[in-house]
Length: 234
Length: 234
DNA sequence: GGGTGTGAACCACTTCACAGCG
DNA sequence: CGCTGTGAAGTGGTTCACACCC
Image (cartoon, rainbow over all chains, first blue to last red; front, side, top):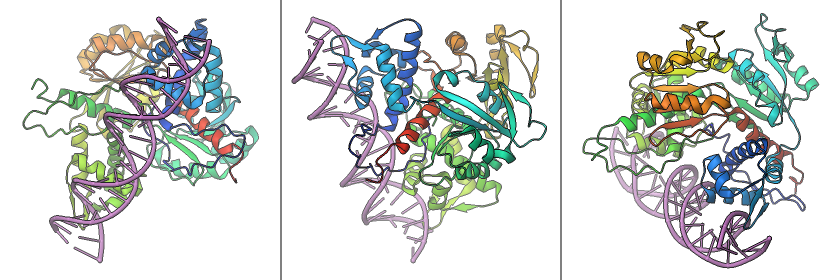
């Protein structure tokens, strides 16, 4: 997805205490597992019960060898000569990704982007509950957004604790992002997704991911420019 | 990053006709070059004229060796023992990314996300002009969004040609994404950025990038779950 | 001395090819 | 016989260390 990783902490590869089956899945594979999950859920909705690595790979836009290697990080849940049971595999991938319980997400910033995220239906269906949305503008505080009412960012800590939010999405201007991010982290949140076009500093142990639309367009521009460049027929 | 790459076309590594200085920059490096550009522009705004690889690397959140290696793909624009001239380097990175001329962007979907994108100030300042926004809902067509008026998606081809749009952002429901994407491609657009949570099929030569917020949250969930897992102190 | 630019070593991911199982 | 699961080979990207230039 988006393209830019979170903090690239080397991860000391903890020696893994006795019963923990967590095997440390490569980041690239984790990103693709979410795609498989999406494809599997689509198949499930269509009532399809079994699928081969070949067709699931095509539906996800990857090669079948990549798919099988990725699944091998999660476990052996297929039947040789047959394929995978859709629901069974879906459950196991979800478990490996930590989606067995719901996550509570708070959004900071109730501008266009914040509202878009709050109303985005794709979250609930995939195990993410939006439990709060904040803004600093007193004209916006108290307004309804979807099922929620906009909270004052002054009450950030209080509301985060009351709602039990364990993930925060930053949808706010670059200038204030670091300040809010610090408060969010201080309030005990370890997972942050930022849409602000700045480099945020977070302490060790906090997981930060960044999405920047301008960056995405710039990457497209690079490829477009190369494609248009003269001298292809050479 | 978004995390998810565009179509991973092997790229036959064209033999490069005579004068072309295009050297094929690795995808990972391209993504980071946009970060350097952002950091450089921040420095420029602060009136700073020179910078070393060490401090630019820190401002961008990468290691200084990675930074220097990345810049070496673009060219040798530093002075040994001194560092880089901010403006000079910024210009050359922009040129390498194909940002010398402005790109014209059309947005399809005038829901919350589409509106958020249309009004997002970060585009114009970085060489992207939003020239059109479309919607299928007749209640929305004709409304003002920022400086634009929402066009009817029925007029997609006409308006794309009239405005000269060469990039399209899809901010619409998964169900209609493929159909619109096909029309956009047929209209001659080669660069598409999709926010729809589906796997889109595009012909060879079209550049597609995907951003999916649910995917980003799922990746965060994976890391959060691992961090919470028992047995760290072992 | 100081900091860039780069070949070489290292590491991680991807692809291949086939063994193993139903 | 078909398709999964996986060691092994191949590829690409990152890190290191130092030559080179100011």
